[in-house]
Image (cartoon, rainbow, N blue to C red; front, side, top):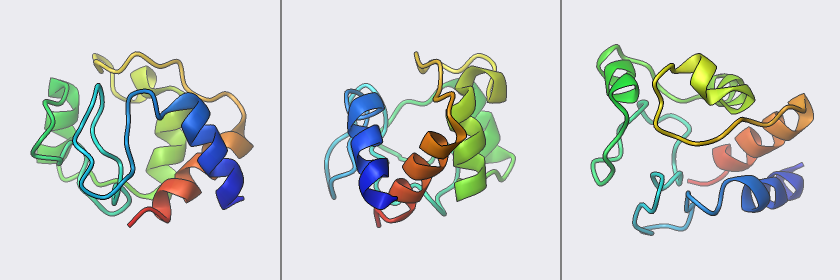
Length: 104
C-alpha cells in the first residue's frame, strides 16, 4: 500500500507539496513528518487563517485526520486556501495518509 500511496501522492499532491527532508515549502508546506505534527505548524509556510486557528486549538495531524482532510479539505476547514477537491476513493485517501505517515 505504501507504494500505491507514493504514486497517488506524486499524482495528486506533489505539484504543491514536497516530502523530501529539508525541501522548502512550495505552493504548500513540506509534508515530511506531518503525522504527529500540529496542524499548520511548519514555521516556513504561511497557512490559511483556518489552519492557524486549528493549530491554536491544539489539533494535530494523525492518519485519521489526514484521511478525513483528503476527502474534502474545504469542508473540513472552510476558508482553506488550498485549491484541491480531495480524493473521492477511500482506499486512495488511506494510501496517501499511510504514505505520509512513513515520511519521517
